[in-house]
Length: 184
Image 1: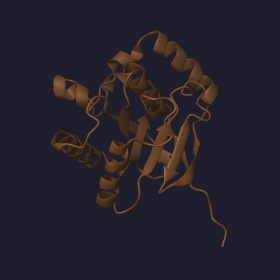
Image 2 (image 1 turned 135 degrees about the vertical axis):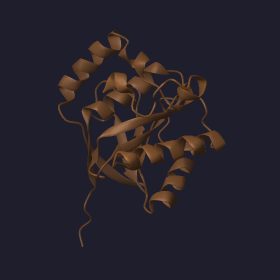
Image 3 (image 1 turned 30 degrees about the vertical axis):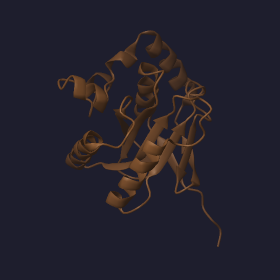
């Protein structure tokens, strides 16, 4: 029996938010939630943390809010993304691994994990190392050249400053980190 390679497509908005999250907190590891209606397409992401990289009651509270939000919008949590602070880091952090275990228990199956290479984010191709249970997942980002051009312009304009994550929300509860409406 031949093994088939799983593949997923990442919507341009989802990829943009990952890049913005990384750009806003360049000296930190950033972790977020992959969201969609099927495992074949990451339609959006919810930026999660940049500061608190340990599992804690606050992390659990944030995950509960994400679960409620995705259920309300008929979406599902597909997995996690991480852009590591240390560019040479090849594996997800212990925090992301622990969050993945928690998600696997809640979802009933292994989550999709994106470990992104911060030095390749603007190239798009080759930036995402995606796995499910250690097995490689092929990732497609539509129209990478035009997306890269748009990202360069938007980063130059400071658009990333309007992206918020759970950590930001804990400091200012007026910030809508679940939808980031200024980026939609």
